[in-house]
Length: 563
Image (tube, rainbow, N blue to C red):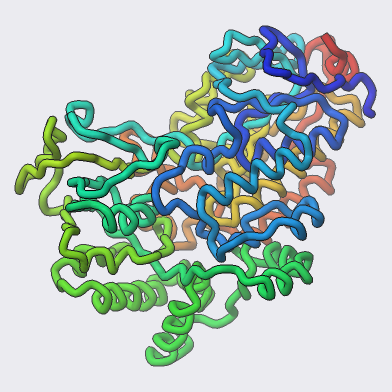
């Protein structure tokens, strides 16, 4: 065990008003759970703070009907333990929320991680003390925790955006948000239901709600591209085949742009005839999943290539949806993939049902929500239930919601007022010993998130271990490294179509939020290579310091003594 490292504290149901740890982690989803495991392996004392009354993060809160992952289950899982990979059997190609939550609970129990997780605890503020080189974290439980290191595993899609629909609080019926769905089962049988929003959550929930509701009105502002999931049960033989070469699968993920097990295309869509393109798109359509975007390598680089792929999907919508007017409203106009593409399990077919009505908010905007229902410029529809699938304050929402202050008391929210700036999406200048998991400036939401989470936590853990080994009190990004990374990130984004429409990638869904494309689009393999180079070169771009004048009098070993 490293010198001076604290013995881990068991909570035993009692929350201490003050305590000192080597590391404080925020969030007990995939990030927090693996952080607890990895930091314990290093012999560090850590506490994972979670606002909910259960673990799971995104998969604790998003319990809406039809909620499931859009990455194949066998890949949307941890790889740090082959024993875990071999023993767990996923039931479907794309697992549902209850199954993913059950998996995370199994991981926490298997590795005895719950004793390092404190539930019902929301971080209200965190401030860096330059005199002691410690973070002071205050919670809604009245606790004050201190630690040299502070890790944010808060999730990219974890804070719902504010409801900006006039009169939303006036509705007298039942109102639900897909992002904070109740634990108990909600019965929509025979009820008049309105759904506002047509993003990923809505696409999954709408077909399920439509099966039970007396009537369902779907309010759409912007049409969303969806390709078939082609979901199916995972038979024993399929599981055995994948498990027999799990290491190979994980290596193929590392070589893929989106960190998934799909072959990287080498051909341009513009090199082949329209007939060959259509045949290839049909093949990918039938396969289902995000492989559609891997038909050709330039679908996110060339508008001409993208136009053909976009039109193919629109043609499919016109084939599926019987009413031509409805099909036209459901057909997106923006380039495919500049907004989050969705996987479809019966979404478009739902609009062939007699009890389902599509409302185009482009032509008839919502004026207000009333006690009885929703009033647009065209009519006033009365509902028993309203479902709000209005999205998230993505990437940065959960981070800036906490009052985080670095050197000289500068608030992170203020530093990021014109958009988030980071180095590798892992750390930001002026905030020593603060690390982010899948932060803005990393591939994050453009990848298999679990693979990216594990990579980040491994990298951060190794960086902390390196600092301890050298006796460094602080690890801090240099402004020059941060600026260079942000310039590079903007450059590679500019070479793609990702920035060509208003999306939550840009923060465009949140009024007043700075428009900065937040994920890194250089691809997962290139990003892994860059992170490896940084570490190999002595954590290039980071400064490690013990200067008592600047960082306080304590040495690393003194900071890692118990209280």
